Amino acid sequence: MPLMEPYRVKVVEPIPILTRAEREAAMVRAAYNPFSLRADEVTIDLLSDSGTGALSAAQQAAGMRGDETYAGARSFFRFRDTVSELTGYPHIMPVHQGRAAERILFGAVLKPGQLSVSNTHFDTTRANVILSGGVAVDLPCPEAADLDNAYPFKGDIDLAALAAKLDGPDDVGIVVMTITNNGGGGQPVSMANLTAVAKLCREHQVPFFLDAARFAENAWLVIQREPGYADHTPQQVARLAFDLADGAVASLKKDAIAHMGGFLALREEGLAKHCEAILIATEGFRTYGGLAGRDLEMLAEGLREVVEPDYLRARAAATAHLAELVKAAGVSVVEPPGIHALYLNAGRLLPHIPPSEFPGHALATELYLAGGIRCAELGSLYLGEEDENGVLVKPAPYELVRLAIPRRVYTQSHLEYVAETIAEVAKNPERVPGYRVVEAPALLRHFNCRVEPIR
Picture (cartoon, rainbow, N blue to C red):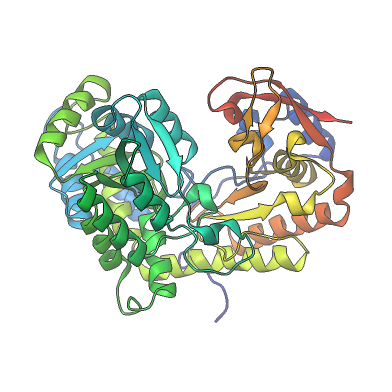
């Protein structure tokens, strides 16, 4: 069956198309940091799938009935009921985005020095653990170390390593499973792995939470790849996952296909009351949490649309199509491809650039210069460790570039343009220079650093 988007375009927006010289000038102005580019300087924006999706007609219509009452708005109860039906959790708190839920949860659960253990913490999750006084520990499964292996659930946690951590001597304050595992190449987590994690956490009386920003995409990949789930719906698989945990945080800018919003969902009443106090003090009253009524309405509708099999099937097929085109051009990707993003193996494409000169950042920069494509490095600039003089002392395990695909925004021809641009860069990869950091903050440096090419 040919690849076809299960929707038709109703509103369009012009795409900026710049010359090579204009893109070069833009990158100089941005100090070679894609995060510092202006939107009108970007042709295809694959920097993030967070808050970048296209709203449906039904979501737009739902937004028009938004109730902006400060407390007890009708829109909150529609949102609450939708999230409760999806997750089964009795205590639902809206927040403006996922990192707010992380901050509230870690502040309530983690004591100074305690560990937060995860399959992989993403950047803001790790930062919120650190800011709460905790220590973030990643325990990806052994199969994740082989980028070329077709193992279907590389997002799994290493169960033996988790059991060892829980047995001590370190004090584990929380276990967080990210579904899908964004920092680990967008790979899904199996239900078998989640079930085993839940059992270990119950035995050791350690809270177990999901980072469920891409819960629907994880459910779809479980249906496709894990025996015993082929006859389940995405909503049924998602509910089974939520049933295993004590609660969840979620950025709904991903799998609710909305521009703003998130939730903190909890099972235990005492923790919920503690978190609610922090919510009111920092985000807003418990029935709006920093969101407008129209946001709550659009989120509720988006949560219903995202579990539709036709939508998920087409989104997965689009990513797979892009992956095949990229591999045909001789560029390796993290296998097997996930859904929300394609991860390019920049270290393999650019072997002449050492980790200290950030090959992932170099490839991301070159894709913008060559075709106006903005994307993000997930390599030593993001994950590497440096000394007090800014010298890289521990490179990232892999040098990757993430092409995050916004939901319902780009068509097949847009993705084929991306593949053609990658293919052009891959013809002469030795021409791509490395980069050095000129200025960077101590935390989350990839967002605000200034770099320059090494000529």
